[in-house]
Image 1 (tube, rainbow, N blue to C red):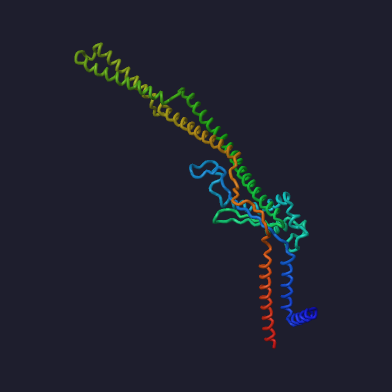
Image 2 (cartoon, one colour):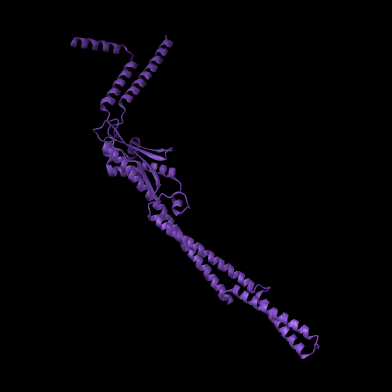
Length: 374
C-alpha cells in the first residue's frame, strides 16, 4: 500500500512538474483558496430586521393639522434619512460604545482576511469595515428598510440589529421633536408680534374716537338722519298749512309771517344737520364713520389673526411633547441558527473556475506569442 502511494505521488509530482508555470501557479492558488474557505474562514452570522416609519397617531386623511405640516406624506424620505443615519459614523460610535464592536470585529481568534486590522484602526477604516458588515437597504416596493448585520456570533448579530432599530427610532423622534420645538419658538415670536399689532390697532381706534368725541360715528349718523327726516316731515306739513292759509290771509298777515318764520327755522335746522353729516372739507360724519369702520375692521382682523396664532401655538406645544413618528418593526431582529457566510462551496467553485479560466487565457496568449516568435 505504501509502495503504491509513493508511486502515485511520484507520478503526480512528475505531471505537475511537466505543467507550465502558469498552470502551476493557478493550481497553487486554487489549493490555497480551497484550504482557506474550507478550514480557515470564520463563520459569519446574519441577523435581519425590517422596519417602517409611520405616524404614531395613525391619522389618515381629513383636514390637515400642525403635525401634518411637520410630518406630511414623507415615508420614503424618512426611510432614506433613517438609512443614512444607521450607516453613519455617529451610529458606529454609539454601537461601539454600547456593544464593543471594534473588539468583536478585530478579534485575533478570527481568520485574518475577514477580521479588521488592526484593532486600533482609524475611524475612517473602521467605518469602511462597518459598511461591509452592515447592510441597510430601502425596499421601494414595500416601502420599508431591510437591516442586516453580520457578526462572528449569533448573539452579537442580533444585538447589533436590535441596537440599530432602537437607535433609529430615537433618532427619528429626536429629529421631529427638535423641529416641533423650533416651530413653537417661531410661533411664539409670531404670537408676540400679532399681539402688539392687535394692541396697536385697538389704541388707534380709541385715539380716533377720543379725537372726534364719538363712541360710534355710524350711530351718530343714523341719529342725525332720523332728525333730518323728522324735520323734513315737519317742513312738509308747514308748507301745506301755509299754502292753505294763503287763500284766506294776505302774505303780510301775522299768521302767514309766523308760518314763514317756522319754515325758515326748520330749513336752517335741516341745513345744519346735513352739514354735520356731509362736508366738502372732509370733516363730515360720513367720513368719520368710514374711517372709524376701517379702524374697527383692522382691529377685528388683528384679533382673528391673533386667535388663530394662539390656537396654532397650543397645537404646536402639544406636538412638541408627543411622539410624532414611530419606527414600526415589521420583522423583529432574528437570532441566526447557522452561519450564512462565507458560502464556502460557492466561493471555492467560483474562485477555481475563475482562476482556471484566467490561467487558460494566459496559457493561450503565451502559446500565440511563442508561435509568432517561431
